[in-house]
Length: 637
Image (cartoon, rainbow, N blue to C red; front, side):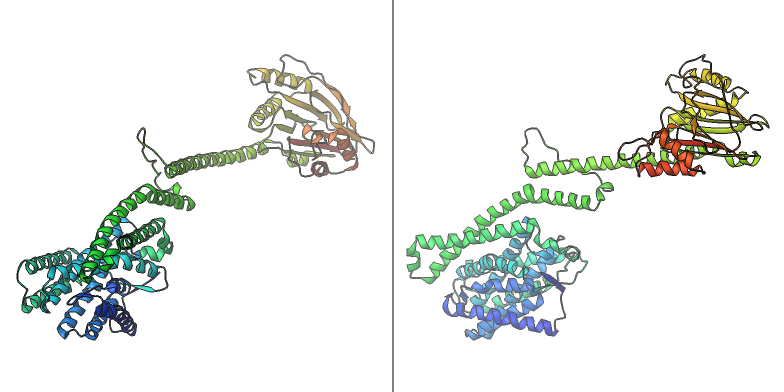
């Protein structure tokens, strides 16, 4: 289905459409005028649906073509020019009024798509009813001027032709054309009030009923009175023909899938079923009553047919209207709401759009699968909205925490000893240290500082656990070890331990190895509070562990004493302090790096970085499970 605005009236396209309509209509009415004439000027006209269809399709071109086709048909049948002229005028309005009323009366967003719901179907019924009334009155006036003495019978034939056949044949034709490649013509949009035009249309309809009442009650009208009625009605209809169109063409430009909506399909299906039912009833009456076909009077036969069709249409179409209304209320509208919710969901608009409200159900009220699905979808949308909100909050909090952890990690690294500055003050000694936490912050610790010009304190510590608690405990331990610094490593550990044991409800503890190097002689005095044994290598000899342990980890028991031990650091010797993050590093086969591998690599290497590289190579990309800290002190010759 395609649409275009109304082309100029004198364009080649308009002229071609006028000729096509005139040819089709004249060929349709000539056989019925010759074979099915019931009263003078009044015949059975199956083609009465053509002006409505062509008018809805091509607008002015369809209306002018219908007028021309009727003129040709009447002229071919031998009617006078008076009859031909007024018949053409009446047929013009028969085609043009539905077109103008459809786009100018009770307009909604889907007007362009013809009948698509109960409201549009009722609108089309009203338009055809009003148009048929006016058209039948005008044709009655025309035949009265020809000497017809049966105005009521003639009006009934005209009204039946132009009410029954546009509904029974015109609607299916319009549905068929809507699915074709033909282009429907739209009137230009005008932002004017439609009220004056509708009042004039009402006046024309009332005038037709008055004329019919006078024609039925009085003597046959004179031709002058008939002509005056035709002229007055024509003037009123000319004014009504200027009814402004006020539809919205935007929906079908944006979403052509609109044509095949569930509501339109349901309406189409029910109307087709209704039309078939009316035709079936009509045929059934004559099949079950063959005596009707033997009626000697053709007028009586067709009056029976028209009466049957009118009654069938009224009964069945009213029933269809009720069924369509219930279908839209119970099925189509809930599906439309569900579709809109799904479209918003697919476009992520559910985050910004107002939250849908579930349909309130009274106790004992029945619900169907669509209601259940809609409620489930609303609940899912609400849950997802809440989940996204909670997730956004969690992400924001996590980003804040990550930023704080980065700052904490930077602070922790800055609080560690700067070995580069210490190396500048050392002679014949080289110091290297590094801490690599498993998380943003860690619980390992190393430090080195001068007691005086001849004594250097070196220490390494490992707090139980990882993360922020271990980092805080490590910071406290570092401060205490430095504040308690004295000539005896054992005394330093003893005083630090007593302080850590105070208010240690969390039962955290830390292993510490602390040594004091007498720089001129290389004498090393140390104490070990439960830490890994350091490795000492002298010249090219095999590395040995300093296996003496002074006591347990700090923070467990108060009032412990820690003994001092001594060792020598001769020239060309190296001391390696480390935490269990190295020896307990795992590979993908869950094997530990171990002290033996560390000793072998320490023996072969001459640079501290090689120790870290060996651990990284061994882990084979496995995630680091613990903090890694090393301190390397080398005495050079």
